[in-house]
Amino acid sequence: MSRLSDAVGAVERVILGKPAQIRLCLACLLARGHLLLEDVPGVGKTTLAHTLARVLGLGWHRLQFTSDLLPADVVGVAIFDRDSQQFRFRPGPVFTQLLLADEINRASPKAQSALLEAMEERQVSIDGITHPLPEPFFVVATQNPHEQLGAFGLPESQLDRFLMRVSLGYPDRQAERALLLAGERHELLESTQAVLTPAELLAAQRAVRAVYVGATLLDYVQALVERSRSLFALGLSPRAAQGLVRAAQAWALLAEERAVLPEHVQAVLTSVCAHRLEQHDGGASGKGTLLAAQLLAAVPVPI
Figure 1 (cartoon, helix red, strand yellow):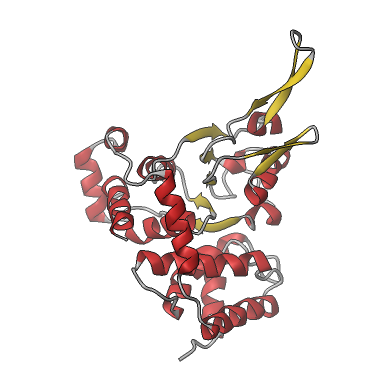
Figure 2: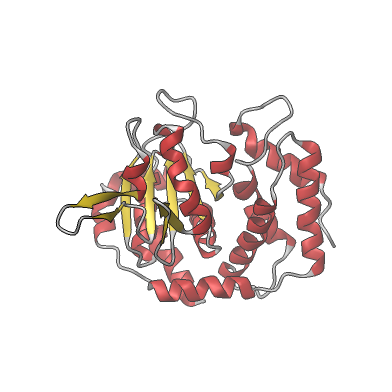
């Protein structure tokens, strides 16, 4: 899968010093999942989303989520055409291969909910008519920490539709020096070429599903899922369990492995699970990384 290695390298030339996060993001998309990028402003969330769209050769739209955003601004609206005396559907920005939902938690819960059907079923229903979305279809959303002014927390039903939540964090000293010397990332982004075509990406997604998952590995995943439900008030859903397997398959494919190993599950577990776990005392989702680590430590690794 040298083409996937080329895609990883192309993203790393724009987003410096974040190899693990880049691989997680690509694994998420290869597993046909939606991606939530959560971090403080200014660390490159939007730039990463733009880079992924360019490198993967995807058509994309950017939609800025604000407090006055309406569901029709996301999915589209039926407009009455006087000439034909009929309602004509005008598609919204969700009708694209990659939708960048920028600062998704700045919008009201009503506007956020407009994405639920699109993310789960890859279609939009308007006035009883179903409109399929393009293939492939991804939502890459950026989110500021909940404690920031003007942010609405995403409900559990919305969070569960994101396969992964990834945080970039601040760059290390070496990467930040390179950023200071190189200048704006947007200039480099404009010259970034597509490494894959949408057809090649769809083929890579099919290859993900062909990565072998043994019975022992499935036992390990089920043990993690079952333990999460006994340890925490909000454990892992069946959708999360399926996503964990798919993400581990994608990680194995990026590592050019033919079968999923326990270390592949461990590599993706925090990003897949941390935003889904909740303590019995109602602990904030910001503690999810610690809860995921607690879950990993509580379940023995199969030999």
